[in-house]
Image (cartoon, rainbow, N blue to C red; front, side, top):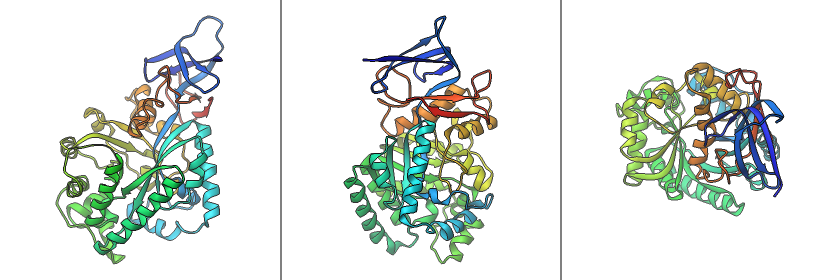
Length: 394
């Protein structure tokens, strides 16, 4: 064993507290963490913070060909129109090339794992051999009930393709506004069998208006396109999702279920969810939410309820980068009362827990191999800033 030591102004162990002027010792052969501690006199201390490898809890890396092509501030209905117009402009080889480029960038920036959404197999070849671990959620759409059987047949074939590549994958539903009730339940049932589910939940007020009152930009967008819309329930879109889960499989649910965005999450939604889900996780994608409709999730409410928050970047159709540190800087600016160590737990440990990789990733606990990331240009209290940048050490 060849042991190496690296020291920095701050070490966020996410296991044994935060160490000012601390070190991380690791096995140079495979990156296994040996120990952490306070520096001794003579240690070469780098200005910055050492953190475990990030876990991007929500990404659509196959949409990397849409970088820089979308207008900002259109709301969800306008964003969907742009997706429909632009998502197929690139050929397969271009998509593969850009997927590789952005996954390489994420890896070099310090992302060790991600929960990724796929609608086709264009990212599979890259994922198969990439050091960045990915669990792929095969997302389905279909607003008409008669589409359900065909859509599910197609996604199960895609799942077989993913399996042939050696990729961890399973079907997952997209959202309330792109799916018939039948398809939502069928795809949720398939995902639950895998033990993992990811679902776009309460991303915008337009989504809530669709379910609660049958009004608003999302409703008008769907009707104008000739698409069926969910039955108006007078309840939130999250409660609608819980009803469709129950139609697929009776509660309680002990699977790892990730709710993504959560911009319109309220206390009664949380209360309803806690009654049926044992392992819910809540991915927040702040820069994407600002990009589309200039909103942020209710972080104070989520913290008050002890929710397991994770951090994602979403896609390059709704973000200028796939940079986890920029997401944290955005969160710190909006919620300065949240300790940096807590935000890093969201960005590292909770994502690892959701993916079932907490024994390997997420913290500097001895025996793990999370990767070691240096974050430079932090402030004097160890917080990220708009100028902060990350780079992988191992």
